[in-house]
Amino acid sequence: MPAHASLLILKPSLATTFLRSSLSSAVVPLPPLHLRPFRNARNLSSLSSAASSPMPSLVPSSSDNVGGCRSGVISPPPIEDSVQKIDVNPPRGTRDFPPEDLRLRNWLFDHFREEMEDYRLTGYWSDRFRGRLDSKKLIFRCLSRRPCLLEKLARRLEIRLYCFEDRGNRRVALRPELTPSLARLVIQKGKSVSLPLKWFALGQCWRYERMTRGRRREHYQWNMDIIGVPGVMAEAELISAIVTFFKQVGITASDVGFKVSSRKVLQEVLRCYFVPENLFGKVCVVIDKMEKISIDEITKELKSLGMSEEAINELLQVLSVKSLEKLEEILGAAGEAVADLKQLFFLAEKFGYSEWIEFDASVVRGLAYYTGIVFEGFDRERKLRAICGGGRYDHLLSTFGGDDIPACGFGFGDAVIIELLKEKELLPELSLQVENIVCALDLHLQGAAAAVATRLREKGRSVDLVLESKPLKWVFKRAARTNAQRLILVGNSEWEKDELV
Image 1 (cartoon, rainbow, N blue to C red):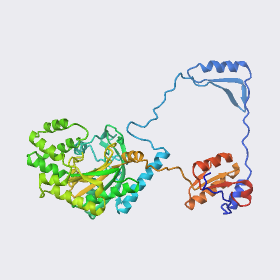
Image 2 (cartoon, rainbow, N blue to C red):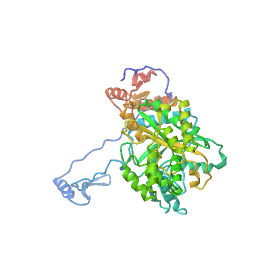
Image 3 (cartoon, one colour):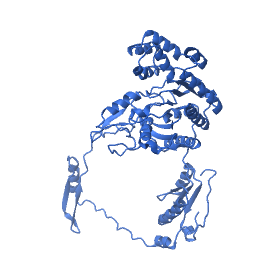
Image 4 (cartoon, rainbow, N blue to C red):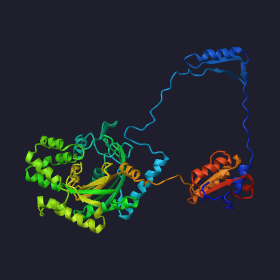
């Protein structure tokens, strides 16, 4: 047992007279099972010959008749040369959570939830969609009567979906992220909710993507969104929440930073060169690849969209800017992009996280619905992909047929942050812990042990009840392995004295 554990002698009067009397009542034993030997070698030979038969057979013996019932020999099934084994690994890109991993996931989620309580956010969950599949994982309303919606979402989100048809021939998809679900819920609530809304969610998402370290085809995501605030103060609050979380788990500004920019920077450059507005989303998707492919490939893709060489050169020049002062020289101080960014950096200083953020014009985020400020958390050692990201999406609700409302939010996946915490050796040791182990020392006292466990559980105590007759050595080892605070032994003589050890 661990050093802090205790072995207590208690007199709690936990059992009733009825319980003790019922335990002491006589138990009628089952009659013994008599095994009869084979009477002659003929039975053995029939067993041997039946074993080679492709089907089990019953060979009766006329002389074996006890109580009106015939006895016989059932041949065993044929022995196959090889047994086909199933693949015990989870599907590619997904995970199982054995107890030790689940404890770690719960630890992380608890930190997410504590953060939301500090920022007074309201949780939401979207688990319903037409089609009535009983699954919290299928939330997109991609219906047969609106067959274009799935493709429209895929194009808008610029991500690869897991899509299929259910048995009612309705097109559905595993959700790739939570923000469209939020937009649908806000439209559903309409004017029954008062703005601004500050909502958060923890949900599972799926994307059919190429896997890298920290990127899976399935992950859990912490989302925080602010609906109804048009000013940059909302984005400043979002980044503050993430920074506070990082500090709580031991990550510092020397470990992680935030790249900040605005989609309006690109809009102003493209407008100067008369690039059509309908190409804006496609240009953003190309620019988002800048750290993944070469500049020559970026240029080639932009040319394929119809941009002139002059416009491409100017755009790439702006995207290389790493300071607000330089950006202001190029675009001027009158534009919305510069004004929003200057306000954000001013607020960052007041919130106390100015050392965490830096301007980087190349940050545009890949999702097509962003409209203003965008930000991305990154590992300063550049060993991992983006840790989290978000921004403003003022026009997303109209994609679902609603009225546009100013909105911004972020998504924070569980896989990358776990990799970062491993890298920084900040993962906690989360061993199994239990308050009480209750063990009956005699089989006829198992009911009494169950009564003790029930009374403790009713008082809010955690109890590990030993369900079998085990030697004391095994019980003490289990107490040490589970870090039990108390070991309660229910013994025969102690129980008669109304005592527990």
